[in-house]
Image (cartoon, rainbow, N blue to C red; front, side, top):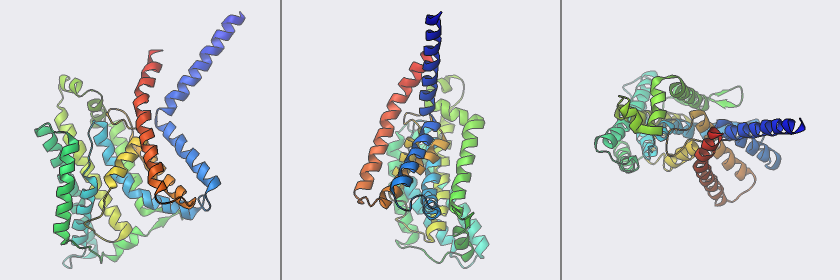
Length: 340
């Protein structure tokens, strides 16, 4: 009788551990990591746990969150988009150029600039996807080429100069802060994330995005063409680059041909740290949001601790490598748990 009780207890303990491991392998595990980092810096870094500091963090993660939301779609299909930083630069100069055009009223200029920025990003993103699928080229190479094309176009459109003098209503909206801690640009980022979450979780398109990343050939054999979905995810990535460009303009009030340098790497880092697999098929956009928060909290916390500027990239780089290593083990652990 006692042996039976012991076996039952062991089975329950194993079940609890299995559940904990499953949680740690999903978004909840990343969220727990974020909470632990927040607690650590709150206890060790002066002025970290203040409304002013959290406001600063929310302002700084907005652009990367929007870019990373679009990047999540691409990486879920097993691709990568290195062009989003340069697309952001191009879209900022397009949007700023339209907004300072005296032929338009402020509100007309803002509306046209928003449409033009998002439209340009979506079109160039679609071109990325079309070239990848037309000639079956690696997305790494194609988007690396687009990175240079968009960067050059940004310099041409802006005549290699920054563009200032944006409409005052636009500037005022960018300076809005809700409830003393939530800036308007962060709320825009949250809306983008929620839309992306809904699309991936509750639409047929979202299910096919995951399916293509898991087994593209199986999708093809089921009678569906992965090509259109893969072009669509690059279009979404370009679209979010256009939205991020408008967020950049709201934050800095200037269009610049050199904006967005290195932003693509931050976006990829947020996606990977957030738990999305580089091989595709696994991950979530909520995890991406948490990943973007982890990156910025680490950067801000280290700064408040007085860490040298050369130390911050080392720590953040180590976190990214650790996330990739964990990703390599995630699949094995989940398969072991499912086989029990």
